[in-house]
Length: 233
Image (cartoon, rainbow, N blue to C red; front, side):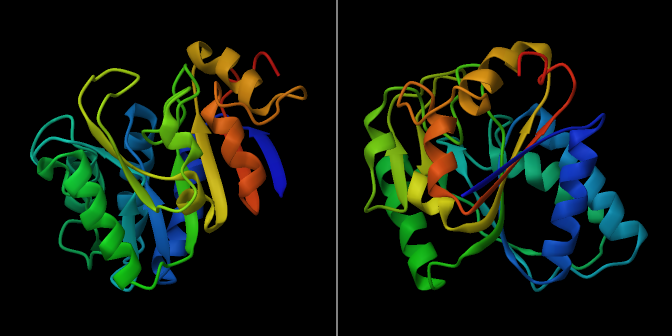
């Protein structure tokens, strides 16, 4: 396991630069939801469009999804569709494998796991994750039983531990760790304490801190922070 923590002025742009190479190279990548990744996807669309790059051989998977229709404003797929895919303006698009959250947590989890297995349980080149102020990642929340799952790739999460309080579907820790690199993108002063708990010098795997539990499972972890989020390290 390798953990690298970087403080940069624009973590979203740095994340986008990592993803461009993976998508053009035809890799399997995992994207996530949230306000900061929104900027990543806009930068990514601009880079692919402006440099006339072809990402059509890549596959895009999702770390998690809310159990809402794909056109709902709470949908992670809608976020990626509106920012990344729409921003390509007709350029070749990657193969996007969305989680069908509208099926409900149990059925959607089973369907997405089947899709991953049928794709050969691909090893992801990059898994992009945010982190909540409670240190949750994807839809794996502090203290929930889903953190102990080691045989499944995908789980239903009937009760979300953070707003919006709708059922979720999430990749498990082993699925997220099946990657060349996990990239955490964390910004803002309100995340500084969570960053210290998850990645600081005293951090250790703790079910109360989901992000800390992924670090020892992954081969390589990069944490991209803005100065505000890094303030307590």
